[in-house]
Length: 210
Ligand SMILES: C[S@@+](CC[C@H](N)C(=O)[O-])C[C@H]1O[C@@H](n2cnc3c(N)ncnc32)[C@H](O)[C@@H]1O
Image (cartoon, rainbow, N blue to C red):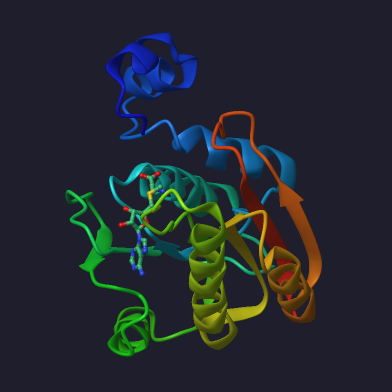
């Protein structure tokens, strides 16, 4: 969310988020990604990394609920959903969502995932971003380091053919990370949603984990 109130007043996505009850304009980045890649299809077990203030969790819950209604056939479906959000910062509670305040680089986090889901996940989302220092080179390196750590979590916990969305910064080491993604997923695409205004921010969508 932008901190400048003048900017907020002019920003259509911000207004739309407020009108529709979403906690941040970032909700529209995820809606845009969903429209293009249909990542939520048959997703019931979902982990959201870097959740504060919680708009991606709100969007994830909306689609998980829709999936419960939509699918009841011979293909993969469930009669319940499990969604977990994690952030270093506090996330205000959302009904039926497990929220954890933790740094995902803490080894303990993997235990938390296992304890809650007890099975592999359908979808992992990450909008996590480092706190920027303003020094572009080192910010890019730190963000991609974080991405690699998140990819380790994905390798361990995402099911075969599961989907993954992650925010990265284009720059130093970006291509290395893209290569690592291609080793893990059958389809990898990078995408900049319309509502993404930050310069080198980009989302990478990994579909169908190998
Ligand atoms: C852009 S915000 C997420 C916005 C959120 N997707 C939403 O729609 O409300 C990025 C978040 O990543 C979190 N983050 C960054 N590094 C993290 C880490 N190592 N572990 C957990 N959360 C982290 C930050 O605290 C920050 O709240």
